[in-house]
Length: 328
Image 1: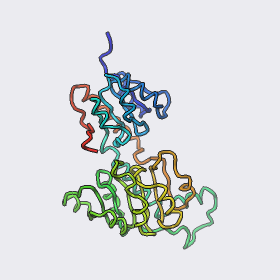
Image 2: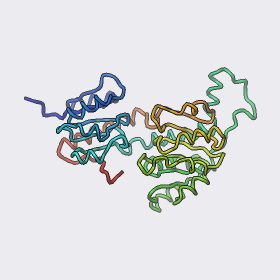
Image 3: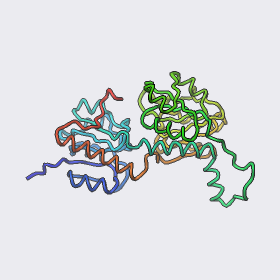
Image 4: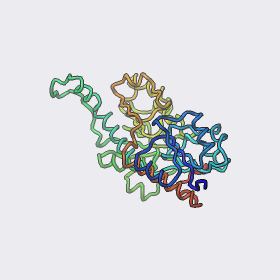
């Protein structure tokens, strides 16, 4: 008899406990190597599978979705962001899309605070000096950074991650400010001690630290463009653990090189792995390889959400984390 189990294709290797559980529940196809699928491989997957489990490194655009077979009914994304998936086209083809929201909020917020501290306290410069064997002992004026307590933190995007950043930053004595497309409820503002700015321009001009925590959508592309970056105080720093496309990377690089912005901490980049090479040359910039959500606990929890979405769909119900175009 033919198998009645769902055919599930996963595009990247996942933590072993997640793969094991998926193989117990479904007819699972995993890649031999942990590297992004080619477009041809993605097209083959959508033609043959009931469920596709992609990651942010897979571009599931209208052209790929147009090649989908009649079997494909769910794209269960492994991750919260879905800007790499054409959700509108998927819906037109009768294909549901789900994601894994809320899992990485704390992990990403931790990394945001780490970047703020790295940039303001010049930790990478100190590490490089130690690794090069150039430390000659303590000096009153060596590698002087800045105290974070008392600084104004402007959070761009006050969702789960932004609020988690606010709680951590408040514990370090920072003043919390934010801009969001919708203002938070008064009780949440009060809990966070957060000041709302309707005007992003006005907030940016008055902050000591800007933290980018909004998703990448057509309306947030280059939200921090050259004009808005120029509003920042010369002694201010910017960190981004969200999506690289939100910042005009070339404009940011020019201003950092010119000393018009004091520093930056980046975990994401406008063109993926193709990072502006001039950024690598700057001492006032901390670059990380998209590590914001990289904890074993978080990755397993993401996998568990994917499993719940697929199993709920298999049982004939709407996936609990379904994404619809109106949400974007």
